[in-house]
Image 1 (cartoon, rainbow, N blue to C red):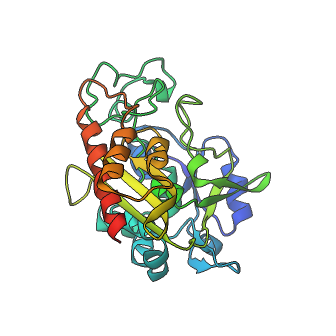
Image 2: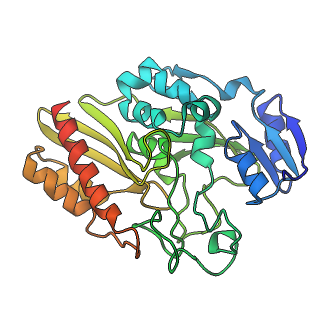
Length: 325
């Protein structure tokens, strides 16, 4: 049963910020995660503040310096279909196309996809787990086949977003507005690992919202991709995935950014894989070495060791594809 709450459709960004500064107020974008969390008792809300009436939060367009601005209220389906994103930022277009189902892509927003709650069945169930303020992560000794193999640090959820690792790989910046003004946060630093605070998903403070995301002008020779492995092709969260942005000079990789999805509590930067390929030509031997390096520090739980092989396979496949792109 849905609990009662107040509702406000904000007409401006300052009005939304003012109301979201109140205790236990929640922002409403597409609502695909918010309403489910309220119904299931993951959290409560004294007031729900709709962002749908703020025009400046929507839209996709180039900035004066050649970068691309994407409003936080832009629908996921729009990202997947936009020609500029498909041509310049292929990893983001691919990631958006892999989000959930067509219905949810038409309803969900970029800002909501970045800020969604984790899908752990202990967190979403009737368990007083660490992420809810308890003292135990029940996944450690329980069912953990879908949980993380990197960065658990006491809480073994996996981050559910497909767009977040793609944006991080593409070196995007998230713009945030709040009571203290606006600030910019690199997409790769937007999410909070459980080792810092197991009860927070993002760096957002009370009253703050994501207003837009800025993607830099693609560097010459940039190739990017996103690959997602899931249990069901029609819709599902990632069992493992990888977002890559590689800059080539000829056949040599001169710069690499690799972020994994479905295997860590935050989009996981895979520095060992980056170091294995940076400055090298992507020969079969280099690709295999990068895949081995990517999982060298993996710490699987009792029932999710299969994810180690999945990550290796995804890394090999995507590097091979980008080599020939």
